[in-house]
Image (tube, rainbow, N blue to C red):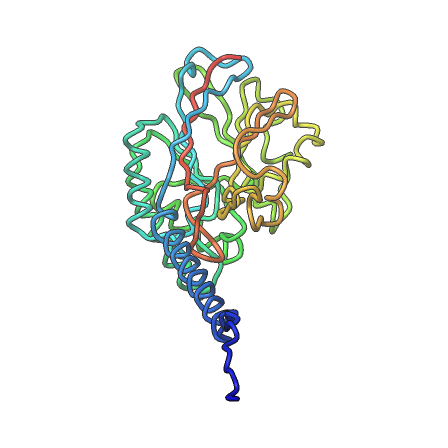
Length: 303
């Protein structure tokens, strides 16, 4: 009797997983992440680095003379020409300041950068900065030194600036006058590379408001312990760049020495106010992120 052939039902096989699939996925992820990183770097170096804000603050001052009610001061800081701030960007910032028509402009240090190129590049940049700043139209302007200025040679920075009408206050002060009224504008030597002497930077008996400039904001911890601290009404600083690169939920990635506690904006120490400007330029890398450059306009008012 012939054998009866029966067919067994076929069990479906699980699809074979190709070994190359995970590696393709990894490559795609790495490529996407790399492209995103390059895109973010390009954005930080071009668009974000050239974004800026004008911050406006009304500053109450004890015993402010009548002549200075509504007096307006614009603060610029951390220019870092030409590493990495371009001349056209500084010219744009000067045009913005001129449009504000302030009574006084103060520049709180780091006109140039110490590296990555040679000191001779920074010396030439100091001359260029001096020429551009000479187009400021405010009736008066003054500056102080920053750590980069001292690092490339203070005399090489001061000489062209003063030759082009921007006096630099180094542990010294000057009266700002309107009629018979006055307040004192004071400037410290750089606190990051030298030792400021507040006995020279702050007048002993001012009998008028005192506005004090010091490049490094964390130096305020020494200011408040000094016998002349009670005389100071407002301290203006820069140096920190506001962190320069700020990530969501993390904050600034890198902060410089003496710019780590008071990073940006307004702080209060009894009667004295400290304002930390984010600056115009960048150091280390030509990047900014979530931290635009800043010009600050202060309007004085009687407290």
